[in-house]
Image (cartoon, rainbow, N blue to C red):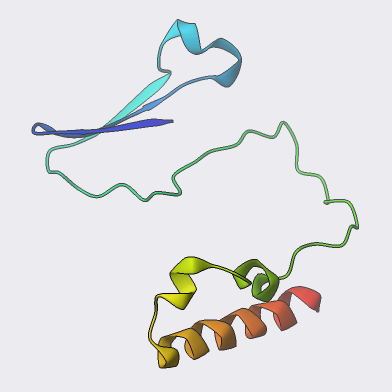
Length: 93
């Protein structure tokens, strides 16, 4: 996916990763200058399979040393850390 924002609005072109040179397989257009999420991405899996059982990074570990977190006020930092701890618990279950 390739998002492009211009004065005419927003356009998102969707490509087949194996053949990008063939051009977009689909195009999404919006008339306004809507925001595009920074994490806009896509993936293709021919079939769904269970992930391997490996130790994964926990949400709270991902926050360690995060400069954006330290830029928040103390109460917001605590809120983010509480949410991360709750997500850690939920993903462990």
